[in-house]
Length: 163
Image (cartoon, rainbow, N blue to C red; front, side, top):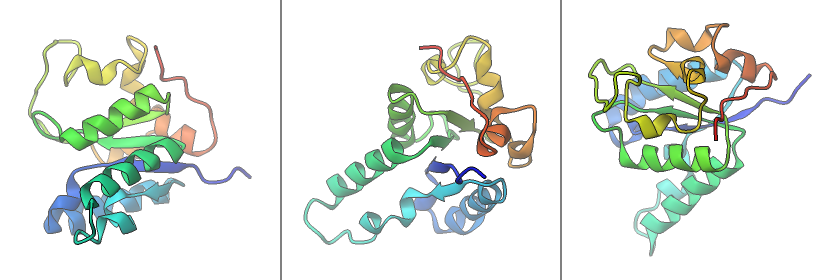
């Protein structure tokens, strides 16, 4: 049996107590139920002590290491535009050629193209049409066998990168 794949959960939910105890907890549970070992940055030890010198730099470095060390990245891209920190983590995932799964249950359209639901640069790590296999618009869609996440968590290879 394959070891569980680690997923870095790039998200802005940890900034709000209500989102942390609601959508963030639900998302973590769903990913774990699918077989992921979730690395959630707001639970990192570096995020707890904001009285230490250079705490912000330590958090940033810890989060970058989390992306680098994870098997893949699952990014919540809600908002218009999405959270800046999440966008940096998405960029790192693309640069390091990590499987990247995008989640947006925000109904607002914020795109510069009719072809993509968000800024076209978020899709630079995919083939022209392959991005749809890595795009999720509801928590229920995470288990969809026709999409990349469910198979990848079972050990199947995915080829998201068009770079």
